[in-house]
Amino acid sequence: MPLKPEVTETLSPMVRRITANNPGVFTGPGTNTYLIGNDDVTVIDPGPAMDTHVQAITDAPGTITQIIVTHTHLDHSPGARLLHERLGVPVYGLIATNPQNQDTTFTPTELLEDQQMIECEDFVLRVIHTPGHASNHLCFLLEPQGMLFSGDHIMNGSTVVIRPPDGDMGAYINSLQKLKGYPMTAIAPGHGAVLEDPYSAV
Image 1 (tube, helix red, strand yellow):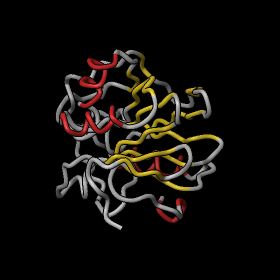
Image 2 (cartoon, rainbow, N blue to C red):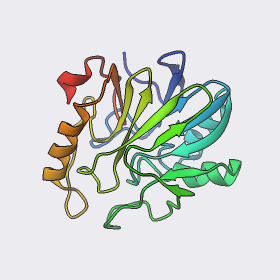
Image 3 (cartoon, helix red, strand yellow):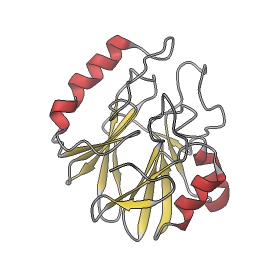
C-alpha cells in the first residue's frame, strides 16, 4: 500500500507515521516522521521545513513533549526548528562532524549519547549511534516492543547514499553489524514502509 503524504497512519498502539510530501529519487515516497506515545508524544524526525508537514504533526492527537532526530540532513531535521518555535519543547540529537550538506539551523537542547535511555511515560527509547550515512546518525530502539527507528541507515525502496566526507562506508558496515545485536521485531525506516523482517533487512 503506498504511503499517503501528510496523513497520520497508525502502525501500532504506540506508533504513528506521517510521511512528508517530499517524494524524490533520494527520499522515495517522502520522509517519514514518527509519533511515539498517545498522551505525551515524542516526535522522531520532524522532516523538512514544510509548513504543511509541521501542521500535520501538530494536528495529530496527543501533546508533543520532545523532538528527536536521527541525523541532520535537510529532509529529516529542519522541521525541528519550526516545531520548537511553535511548541517550545526540547530537541535532541547530535551535530555532524562535517557541516557539508547538513541542516545548519539544527540546535539541539541536549546532545544524545550511544546507549542512552530516553525514558518516557509509556515506553523507553534506546539511543544507538550508527555512523555511516552521516557521522551523527542515530537509530532508536523502542523498548520493550522492539521496533527500530532506523532513519536513513536502513531504508525500504531507496538506496542508502554514503557521501564523504561526512559519510563513511566502513563505519556504515560496522553500524549494520552493531544493529544485529539488538532484539528487533520490525524496522521503521526514514523512507518507505515498515520492514517486518528486520534481520533480513540489516
